[in-house]
Image (cartoon, rainbow, N blue to C red):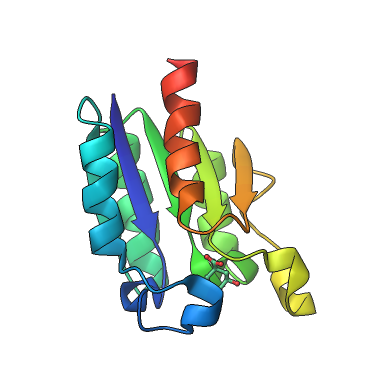
Length: 140
Ligand code: DQA
């Protein structure tokens, strides 16, 4: 099973960015633990702060993997292009948010991604990514 994890803007700063909201683990250290826990899964990881690069990555990984776990970060709330891309590609995409976007500012309640994704996990911290992996494993 091949799974790509794609993170959007500012998620490269996990661990130092607003730790009260996003926790104090870096994504790299979390990813190492995830790889150890699921040795049979081949993980690809990509992070970008640039909207078009995320669209390019989604299109590219769609040809290479069995499932995509996507945290579009702030682009969730603004990007028609990322929503359109998920509708266009055939690989299943799970939307993940570390924080509970519904318990924060009003603008975070709008997602251009949710309706196109298989499902959404939010508010469960980094464990949301692991739960998305479990979904793909249980489905295969
Ligand atoms: C986020 C939530 C978004 O609203 C925010 O812009 C982020 C991270 C999350 O993982 O909780 O950058 O996607």
